[in-house]
Image 1 (spheres, one colour):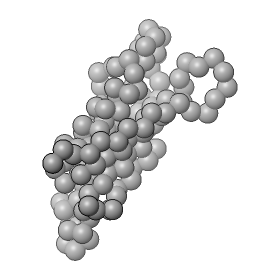
Image 2: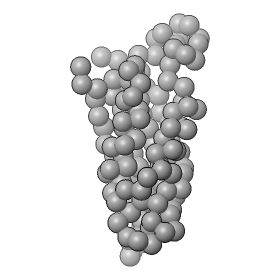
Image 3: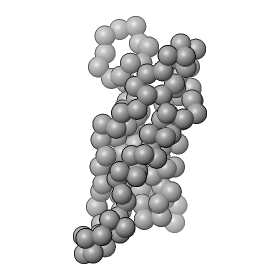
Image 4: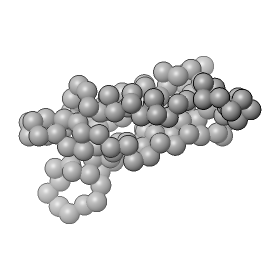
Length: 122
């Protein structure tokens, strides 16, 4: 089991997710944090980006999910983002946090977030 990780934090994209019609109509910003667990020794030895997960390309794929088909729950959104992370066979586990800082909560708050972790079935 590896303890190597790639962190991509604070990835911001506008989506239309939520259970209320106004959330779908107006959209809002979502912030995604991703942590990928994989063996980084091959990339460290080769110094070649093809031997690791290219975090720029990962960011593009994650943003495409956030800006894509709306869902009701950020739990569902997190699950879809996890599927993107685990699509790379080198990733053994991934953790996604979806922040919804503009959630329709009728009280003062800083953030609403859901964190989910999935491990590749071996």
